[in-house]
Length: 156
Image 1 (spheres, rainbow, N blue to C red):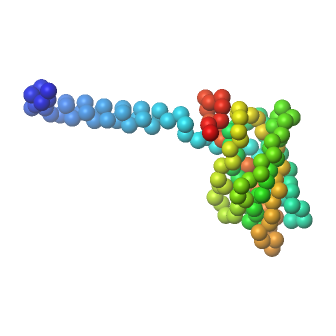
Image 2 (image 1 turned 60 degrees about the vertical axis):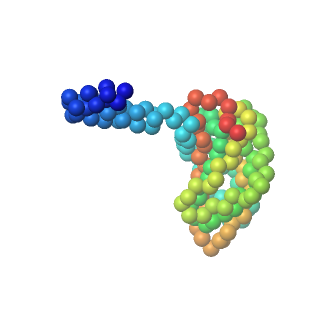
Image 3 (image 1 turned 90 degrees about the horizontal axis):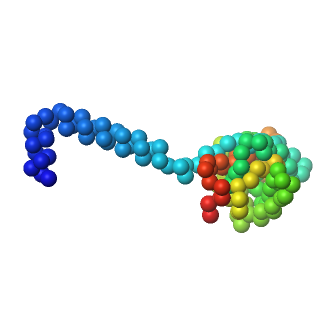
């Protein structure tokens, strides 16, 4: 094998180098496309929470796709989400008591909240929350759904 490689490289090193470069580019391009597990998040809706209440219903666009997980982002006063009830487009609902409250503040997204079972369309979300700083503007909570393409079930 080494003898054959030496013959190839000694005859025309530029051709060998071009072939290897082409192979490397194609390999890197293939690897970057071959990651179907990559997360794809899409905003499903947003709603403003009240300073005088401790729960709010956020309507979501169920027509945007079926989801496996939700995440949150907030603008305005910080808040903590203690529990939520997810309302699906088939009129079923799922109560989720969070083991640790989701703390929202700043521009970062919250950790994902996975929805067990099949992928489903979500039409709304009822959250139970606490405001962290009532002197700040009334918070707006945006909800995004994870649209993992090509997977009928949510990964565990």
